[in-house]
Image (cartoon, rainbow over all chains, first blue to last red; front, side, top):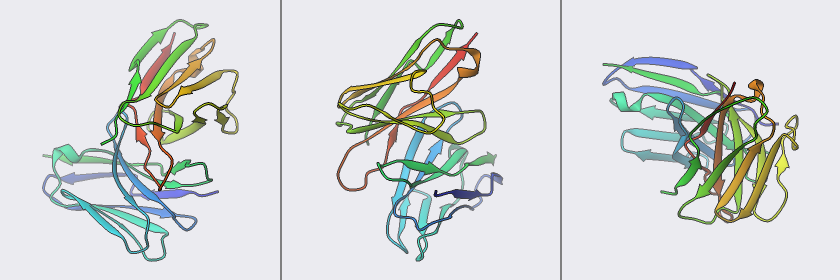
Amino acid sequence: SQELEQSPQSLIVQEGKNLTINCTSSKTLYGLYWYKQKYGEGLIFLMMLQKGGEEKSHEKITAKLDEKKQQSSLHITASQPSHAGIYLCGADGGGAQKLVFGQGTRLTINP
Amino acid sequence: GAVVSQHPSWVICKSGTSVKIECRSLDFQATTMFWYRQFPKQSLMLMATSNEGSKATYEQGVEKDKFLINHASLTLSTLTVTSAHPEDSSFYICSASWRGRQQPQHFGDGTRLSIL
């Protein structure tokens, strides 16, 4: 079965700094999704990547899927307090549109 | 973007009570809905997949008689935790998606269930 490993598990950065979160898959990725979750709340969809080498950006967040489609990264530029939360990568795994999630990366932004 | 509404957001009840959680897709027809459980500081654990008009598919280890799922329409799925006990206390989240090209799942805001 597919497994996703996220790194780091937690991250504390100074406001204004850039940061990167990685998501590595045990198998080829055919659909990779990034979500953000605030504690005790639901998940907010950020981006979906499907093609090797694909890169998408929204505001200050950029997500990339490597050519081999086994690793994705999420990069935040000039971080702000509003970026704080838990970032989860999810991948299509096992058919029937089911998602497998990484364990999450807890991001804290210090003012 | 797509909106999924989950209700209630917080439930506190006595042991032995059955609790129903609703998940609605507000602006699209959800052919498939998913129910997840999340323990503190952990990732989401898929409990079951629900397709409109058919029986839910439960993940291994999830008791289908304990967690009853109904997906009677394209906009509503319900999860009923029957005879809830303290160990059922958790954060439950639903998501919804629709058929066609690969589409992301859109999530509700979750329901925090506390069984006393």
